[in-house]
Structures are given as C-alpha cells and as structure tokens.
View 1 (tube, rainbow, N blue to C red):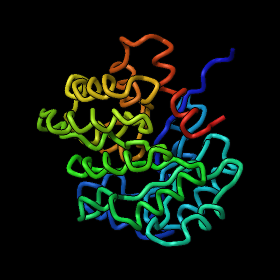
View 2: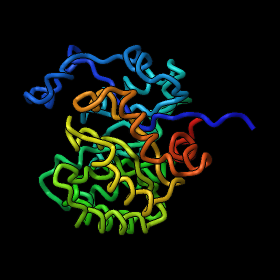
View 3: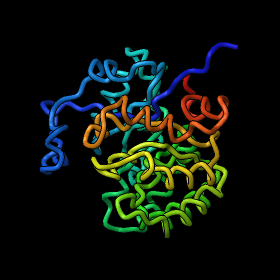
Length: 278
C-alpha cells in the first residue's frame, strides 16, 4: 500500500477586490484583511497532498468560482460551498455545481443566524435532504448554544453525513468544558456525524498553548474517535492566532499519543473517506 494522503480538510481563500467581505471590517480582522490566493495557500501548506476549500461568503457566485478553481488545481481536492438551503430549487442548483473535482459539501453560516433553531426550520430541513440526495456532506458551522438544534437535525436526517466545523467553537478562553462537552458527546453519539480539529487556536486567542487546547481535543477524541476526526488548518483565519506550521505542529502534538494508523486517519484518512477525495 502507498503512503496515506495528507489532507487539510478546511481552509479558505478570498479576494477582497472581487466582492465585499464585510466581516473583515472588524478591527480584530486587520491582520487578514487582504486577498489570499491559492498560491499563498500552497506556499504555507507544505506536505499537504489535497485540501478542502470551504466557502467564506453566502454567495453562489463564490461557490461557482471555487468549484472552477478546484477543477484546475490538483491541490484542491474538493469544495464545501454555499447555496440557499431555503429555496425550493436546491436539487437543481446542486446538479449545476457538480464536477470532476468540484463540490463535495455544503455549508451555511449558521453561527450568524439569530434564531438558535434555524436548523430545525422545515425549509432548511428540505434543503438538507436535497444535499444528502445529491451525495454530498453538510458542514455544521455552529456555536455551542446552537448544538441542541444541530443534534435534533442530525437525528432527523440519518441519511445525511454531517461534519462539525471547529468543534462548534468551544469556550477555550474560559477554561470551561460544560455544557459544551456534554452536547458534543450527544452529537457524536449519532453515527452520521464527524468533526474537524480546526479553528481552535482562533477561539483560544493569541495566548493559546497546547495545554489550553488539550482538554477540548481530548473530549473530541473520546467522543468521535480518530476515524471520525479530521485535521483542518482554517487558514488564513488561523493567522489571527498562529502561522500555519505552528498550528499544524500543535495538532500533531495533541494527538501524539495515538498510534500511527490513528494519526493517519486524522491527518488524511477520515477526510478522504468523508469527502471522497483521491
């Protein structure tokens, strides 16, 4: 057997000249308030064989551009894009986005929805069913207070594979585990859910340490196990707290006690299976 592919299951790109990125207007975003290209990413992601490019904006045009970029960029193994799940034509839109190295999943910025029950809306559930029928995954971008709705949705749609981004952004700066940990364990109890070890340094802030991240990663390892966890850089957002190699090295440290096969799962195998990467 050949060596396992090394996968970065979560990164972004954006062009501030192409369309408005209002979220970058926040003062705290100043360090990343510029364009980031695929060449910039490739220069940072040493050793990565394939990546998953994840949507930034609620923009179908952005998703189409990302799919086109993936189809001509071998490093990008697939795209987790955006579309309006509440529209009745979700299936048709998804059919128009398919390609040989194109869409592998869908994501909505649920964390920005004021309604904590947004995922439970009938029109959203209808859209999610269409995502599953298209053979795609759905990336969950939630905050801890939205996990109850996520759990209910996952249970209602056992045919759809869900991937939890950033472990639902745990409260690392507080040092508290509950109620986040209990909700994560409930979510992980459903077999159609996986999770990404991503975004944690950003949640912890620039003063993060491996020790401050470890309790949260241990909860995830215990709840999901290595075959349902995957590494994601969340570059370039991670630059708010760490350079790419720094976070990648920390992730290696956090799972160093696992077996080589288990580490291979987190850094490649899980993402390959989940997003059908080759």
